[in-house]
Length: 173
Image (cartoon, rainbow, N blue to C red):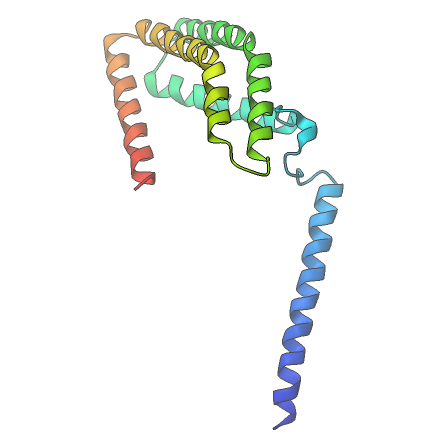
């Protein structure tokens, strides 16, 4: 057996060890410097961390601007849509405490020692009216937005919806 056969495994082991130390240190530094967000924990109580809320807001603004551009909305139509979305948000916020309670209860069931199908079905059944109300709010806001569009914009809206649907179905294949 040559010296190379003895040294090669040692060099590989040292490289792996140094990589592991470097990776652990880098991740710890990122979390410490708030560059990386630690995983969701129970302390959040169903609420997203502040920076996730900001990211969601930014993403929604970007989607709104893109949709407004693609549909060639007038400034009046943009304002009407913003008002519709603002009203829908206010309506949804009434249900936020109930949804937080649902998510906490679901989290408790999902982290239990055994899977309790009946308890999960019962929990979902208990919140059925809340889910229905939220679905109605969403449907009404979409209906109101669609109703304020011109015929040409409605055609574009439907084409955009179809394209999104096809894209989603393609991802699930």
